[in-house]
Image 1 (cartoon, rainbow, N blue to C red):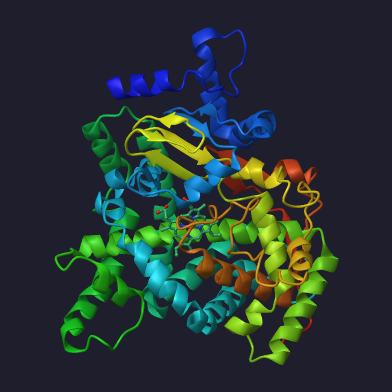
Image 2: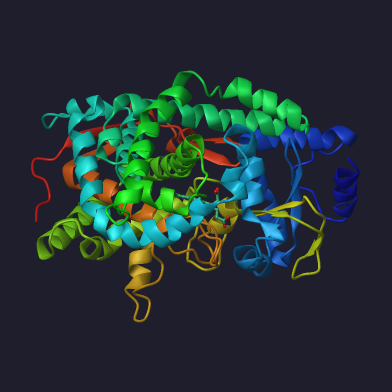
Length: 496
Ligand code: HEM
């Protein structure tokens, strides 16, 4: 209570955005209500007003006041800060209520970060054939894809199809092909992802009393029945089998199950091992699915861009040996168009969220009290940047053109944060650890779809594409065009 009061007092001189005039003490509550469905509106309003003077502003959310940085120097600081002082893990934990839902070890001992950075990322080139195989399988067997048999245009429920592809591709890497094609297992993950995200919001909004939050977590995410039980029942035997073999032949496996076993504390329970995989699924699937959907939607009204990307893919595949690390790296147009969608419609409207672990003074002298949140307004900073020309415009080949300038060839890529592109976080050690893997997976899937299909906006369902496109819930941006796209299978596929 005292800490919350002290935090509130310390913020008095920082300007607030979104408080309707004339409502007195009710103003912050109304602003917090608006935040639930309009975080981009608030971030843009504040950014337009305060970024010219690089001033930090604050917004009210139902649970806390959040500071929003506009100064490039502070944003750089958030990308490189000391985790013990301004914590990424603590913010992720509060935001998703993970310690109540899955247990305190996820963010208390985040060994999965090292696994992603030191094992998964260097391994990504080697698993491209597996990713292509899973994408091919889902795009030939999923009911939404199976209806696309001839050259007829047909409406496609995109969310189910893309979630199916990303789940199979990701789980092929996380748990192997058997479970990646097990409908019950994938179904349990899809259900859990929804249940856990909703529970996270509800628990975060509940009174700040541990027992209340624990009880809510037990009610909202029951472990002994439903999808959680299916998930544990399917995955536990995989870990048990591997643990038995572990002593005999440690070097035999080089996959994620093994990396988790190697990195987890020796006494880790089966529940602990399985929930680590669940957390990785949780981090990977929703973000990548949404990114693929945004990219397809943006390209749907640009058939000429689809054709240009397809020509590029055709050339890369025929010059190389099919889908490989090298051929994918040469697909600049594909990379650029996905990055441009990611820039204009990031998965979360704010990134680089940090929670002060003790009193902390930012580079401009602003003092954060312990427990204070500070964020980067990615939605606004990406759209109002001075780093690129016409930043409001969707220009699919913007970054391909930039990379064509001498000395820029390796810059401006999908997985590389920079000023004006904060969708994976900012430059520095705290950027999303999964971004290289995610970029490869997304490029394989979008590239494979462009190689095999044409797609367009369905004119029956969309009247104002910009308005229909997104829903916002707190900081999340959720695409809203389940029935909005039509697909047609191409006569020929790209070949090597
Ligand atoms: C398009 C896909 C993705 C997007 C847009 C995305 C975005 C982000 C962002 C903005 C952050 C916070 C960075 C910061 O604090 O500065 C983050 C953190 C993180 N990401 Fe990603 N990510 C994606 C895919 C993935 C994948 C595939 C994985 C796992 C393989 C992953 C695992 C994580 C983890 C473990 C963190 C650390 C914080 C936490 O636990 O929430 N992400 N990601």
